[in-house]
Image (cartoon, rainbow, N blue to C red; front, side):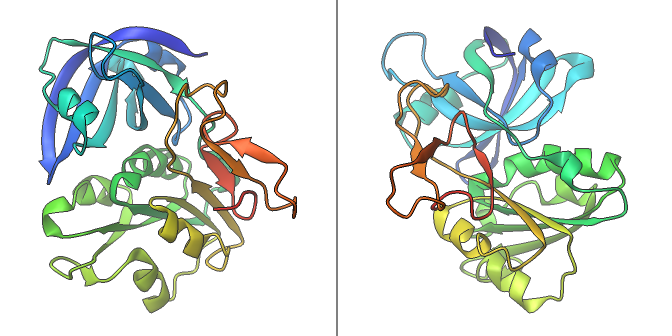
Length: 259
């Protein structure tokens, strides 16, 4: 059930180069269950900026009614969010969208989780739930440079972690796809979230029998009313049919939509 609530800031910590981890407390945590869902964040108390910011849910802690989101400070809206301190409130709408189908990975199977930049956060809750279900987890995460790397140790709680940086300052030089090509991973399912070029490379479905992708897209309303985040389906060669990333996604099966 979607809920709008003024959630209390527990902490707002910088964990990388312009990367912040925001822990919030609120009753809407009780409605969260699917890794890969997101919340729509009102970054100021007024009408400027007007639009909310969609941010993936990184962790869900129902026992203390808290959840974590991780965001990059890169524009005026997220700069305002970075100024929030413990005890302040943030207007949150959520949880929104359809997350990763955790039950598609059976006990004893192997799942590869692929995250690029701010596509890494939803992989934490996903890795946690998969590990709890007896699934072997391998995480492959990519960043621009060493100072941007985050959540490597956190993901290591649930399985092996491989890191790539574009400039080679940490881990393997290159992209996550270079790691996938350089190792003989035997996986039953792939889950991925990150920039469009990365998702296009994974959309081929060559890395596992089943592949699910979480799309990053600019959104207006976040609930499927404004049609600002539509993408075409691959089944329609004329491009007349589409799906909304916010309400039909953000997670889609490989080959379902045009990336």
